[in-house]
Amino acid sequence: MPPESLRVAMVGTRGVPARYGGFETAVEEIGARLADRGHAVRVYCRTAPEAQDQPAPATYRGMELVTLPAMRRRSLETLSHTALSVAHLVRHRTDVAFVFNAANAPLLPAVRAARIPVATHVDGLEWRRAKWGPTGQRYYRAAETAAVRLSDALIADAQGIADYYRDEYAAESRLIAYGAPVLTGAGHDRLAELDLEPGGYHLVVARFEPENHVDVIVDGYVGSDATLPLVVVGSAPYAHEHTRRIESLAAGDPRVRLLGGVWDQELLDQLYAGALTYLHGHSVGGTNPSLLRAIGGGTATIAYDVGFNREVLGTHGRYFGSAADVGARVHEAEQDPEACELRGKALAERARAYDWDDVADGYERLARDLAARRTPGPKRFARRLGAEQWAR
Image 1 (cartoon, rainbow, N blue to C red):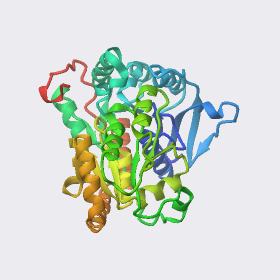
Image 2: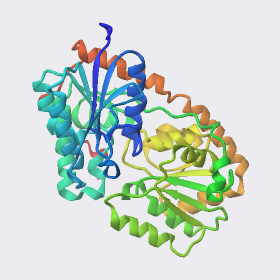
Image 3: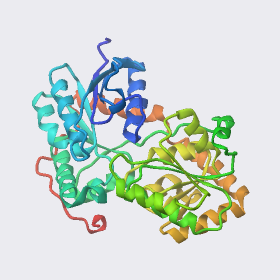
């Protein structure tokens, strides 16, 4: 390995190849680029339930993979896997560790004890998610504080997240967004497999969690006069009650098509690029990869009205805050598909600002700063300042 190269560990996600969410996509795209630049990248992966009897791959796109098990309980899955990952990490030479998800912060003392510089990607405002309940929400609040106190640097993927940590903890973050794939050449030939046509449907892609507002979108669509079908891609491994609510809202309306998870990336990309509109209900994360994939496909987007989404879409997006708003926005889109096409083209241009090579540059600069101890270091006496605008 060249002397200027670094040994970089990426910890706290389900790992790669990316199949599950934004963190995994980021790890794959960033890790592969760092490996291409000569760095030794080690990614910690979770054993997939459906692949427990199969040998885990040792490498992928130039990255070393370390696959470890996790407890299959929602509240313990991430932390149990990260604990095993950290136990492995501290026994192997590592110049820099990137830990994804502030929920893993209680394990940072072990990383620091091994004298490994660490940056934590803090994700979104997890304590706002109803699925965790009061105990889980208190845990996430405490984990945020621990991340500030124990990380050599914080990474935020949206200005709104950086603002939150500055307002709540007087802590600065490195602002490094996600990348947007370019899907304008994705094609449409596979849409026929689902009996769909380009520009002939509305699309939702999301986990079925309350803060993603899939139920609000389905409810608003069902109450609308839309003629094009609503295609819903997604599920939730733990949120059974919320999933039943969505299924109940969709029941009896043949216009709503619940596809479940779609793991075929080529087909999923064509779904994004071929939709008349993409409806995006995420509200508590930062820069959302599903949103970036939609605008990278040049698809007109109707998003839940929060700052994170406006940061990405600007004036080229359409927004909703209720089921009634969804119905109105869908009606508007079907009445003027030419305007949708123009907004989609404007969003595709906007997507160019979210470039994975630029994202990898940001991580590489941070890795070098961490390895050279050029970061401010942890705020050992960090405390919540209680900024009112972030309260529930």
